[in-house]
Image 1 (cartoon, rainbow, N blue to C red):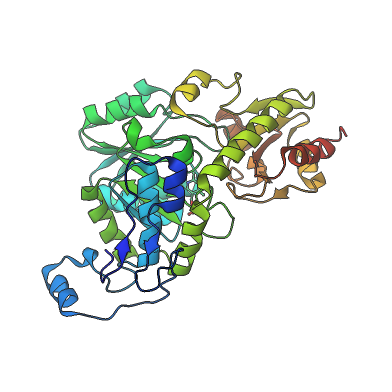
Image 2: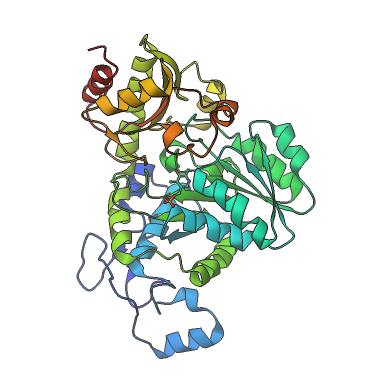
Length: 402
Ligand SMILES: *Cc1c(COP(=O)(O)O)cnc(C)c1O
């Protein structure tokens, strides 16, 4: 998509993930030899004969015309994410929801059917419940942990199976290789929201998924200062999703793209630290008498522990746990924290804490929360990259045991 004499740094050779995080996609500016990707903060690009011909021929995606269509700084992010996921093509968006909604709009047409896990990010759940039916798409929600339930839900009109690879807040895993087999047999695509795992811990395309989606607002950017989203998939699907991005307008701003590309350079080392700190925190919580239960795929107590060992190379930065004494005790715990922030996001370098009962799952009645496994006293912590002793020290004092 980048024209002129600027070269795109497609990372050469079979590099490791740390190398790809640093180098893949970064824009090489031949005029200045700048090491970091410049911010092309421009709405538009000068027209040339070549561009005018491309517009007439309908091949505009290959050229720099107008930033909603494409921009070198934005492209740098997409290329880096494609390299990290091992995918053919990628697009980045103004939010994770823009990536998810544009992808669904591209793949699903009126009369089509979608089978989705019921265990979803709230925004995605609302999209499936409120918007897709209005677009003439039938949605069946299933317990994606039951392959029989997924298989029984498939119809000849099913075009997509949709899951999150690691769910919020209880960290349930999707069996991507098994679901990919079902999708292939059913003649539909498997789309995976891989926000919690990141390509450092799991690459869904290599496990058989067709489409990977991200909220880059979380771990990929990692600094709690950018809202962005991404899709990675085969080139043939990228073309259709790009058209939806154009028409619905969910393109990423170049300045945000600059921050995202900069943030992703440290993705591999940040994830290594998130994985390590979360494991240490989860193990400490499991030994604490004031904690009734801990949910983390790196613990032997996780109900899908063997699947986690098979499908994940790291267990991520999110840990959930139940404080004894219910939601009231959990709320007191949050109010006593000094270092950790109570904030409704995750994946930043800072440790964050939220209570599903009054944030992500506040719309559900207590009985409905129980039914999906969210019991009173549940706390979700996004473990940051601070010193683990400081994180645990703050949790300890807020639990009232130090
Ligand atoms: C945050 C999040 C989203 C939505 O992303 P935005 O960037 O906030 O639009 C989608 N899926 C998951 C799993 C998320 O955590």
